[in-house]
Length: 479
Image (tube, rainbow, N blue to C red):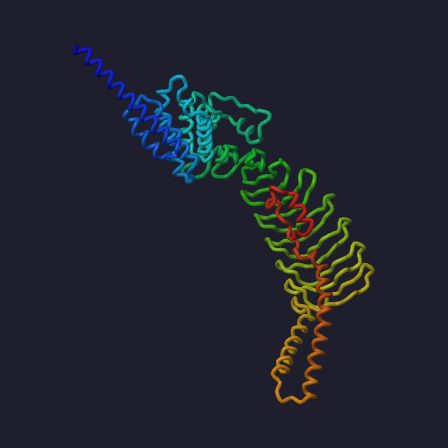
């Protein structure tokens, strides 16, 4: 009888435990469905201690932590919740029977798999191999598989050198690296100098940013940088003296520039391009400073503009040309400012404008001609201001004085009032005439738009994602 009573008691206790367990599972499911993810995580931690063999508790902790991970934005919060995901997956995996965990997690199972791999790639790209291995280890443990990065970085002896067609340039270049070298990448010596192979990846998707070998802190041999889409951005080859030939490309593999580096600064001749066939400009550098003659070109290779630079400042004759090679305008530059004679020409060779500059502004007599060489008008400037405008300003001041006298006049005779009225009317007439002349002169200023840019060739690197914009701006004088 006692044995029967004991059996009944044990049965009732088991049923009670089972009912309590089911209630706790229902509770965390409800918290998760109500999107109370923090409460769900807290409760699962509590229940896991009481029911260590039940898979639902760590499984729902994984789901809630992954939801929180996607909701938070700061790096510390993301680290916190992804670590909760990993910790609870680690708890759940040993209890997983008949893919019960995969059933509970549903689509999140594969999403978490992808996220862990991305985090590993990101940490490796940032140079933190230890943190990358942390994620890759969890990946291999949970998913009984390895990513290509996991095999390549942690087990290089299992990989052969391969080049796969259909991949980006960055992917093929990474695949071609001797995997045994990856054990010792991104190293510095005791003096803090970079040594050996260095590789960096974009954190977002693991695409390689650059690949270069260093010797005593200086790059040697091939140095390649890549766009985030995997296309080549720069190809350089450094000799042992630190000089490098270089080519720069856009995201569509179109050549943008070619030249030489001395260390990391430009040196010698640089040419700028719109693809392999079209050269836009040519510049000369000494130790990173533009020095010597600079040219830009039309599509057929004819020179569009020439200027001279000394230690990064424009000095000497500056000319622009028509497509047939005839001079469009010419002037002189001194320390970056226009000084002296300015000539602009029509396509037929006749003068369009003659004038003078002083300290980068018009000064003295400026003459305008028609296409047959006939003088149309002259303008006189005084340090950048039209003499006509100066006269108008002075006459308006006199007019204001007369108008004030007229308004405040008391005790004036009829004759005096009449004379004052006539003076005002005459002055207003003269001002109107001068303003009409000034308006015509302002319209002529449109003829000077071609020389407003001062000849600065726009650096194609500023338009690396839209070289056609560069070409259009350069042809129009950079406006």
